[in-house]
Amino acid sequence: MGALPARRTARQLRLRGVTEADLDALALLDRETFPEEPYPYFVLRQMYDVYPDHLLVLDDGTELKGYVLVGTAPDKSRSWILGLGITRDERGQGYGRRLMDEALRRLRGIGVAEVLLTVVPTNTAAILLYETLGFTAEQTTRQDYFGPGADRLVMRLRL
Ligand SMILES: CC(C)(COP(=O)(O)OP(=O)(O)OC[C@H]1O[C@@H](n2cnc3c(N)ncnc32)[C@H](O)[C@@H]1OP(=O)(O)O)[C@@H](O)C(=O)NCCC(=O)NCCS
Image (tube, rainbow, N blue to C red; front, side):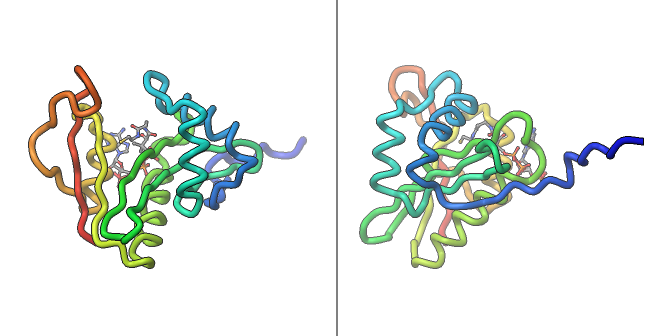
């Protein structure tokens, strides 16, 4: 009898900070998770340049499977979650929550007072995740928040 195949559920993704060498893989990951509106490569590059400490990735040893990107004001009064994505094949296993928990833990650690984010109003999975983390919708949907037709819900968490 041959060796048993590794159980998929036994594999743990490693959560770590991003490196410059990850940028190509990060752009691919972002394009996979947001096929209709990926960040242009140069924007990801500049996010990395400005916020390297708050860009976390999930690594399976070969590929990146998830990321969270956070931007923080210089006076640490507030942070914005600028991106959160898990590859389709890894969704529903707690990885999105793990990335958010770690990002929020780090923000608490540096004394950030509040965290904001935007989400597509029909993105139930993301909204439920954010609500269970304590985020609440600031107000009703903001029409045209990201330009014509790009409505968003703004959610806020006081740390
Ligand atoms: C949103 C996203 C990051 C969630 O990541 P995930 O790893 O699948 O989520 P988790 O397994 O950690 O689940 C965390 C919580 O999210 C909610 N959730 C996740 N998937 C869900 C689904 N299909 N339906 C309803 N709720 C869901 C649940 O509240 C869940 O908590 P529970 O497991 O205790 O019930 C992921 O679906 C994704 O990458 N989507 C595409 C990109 C995106 O929409 N990003 C957010 C932009 S604001």
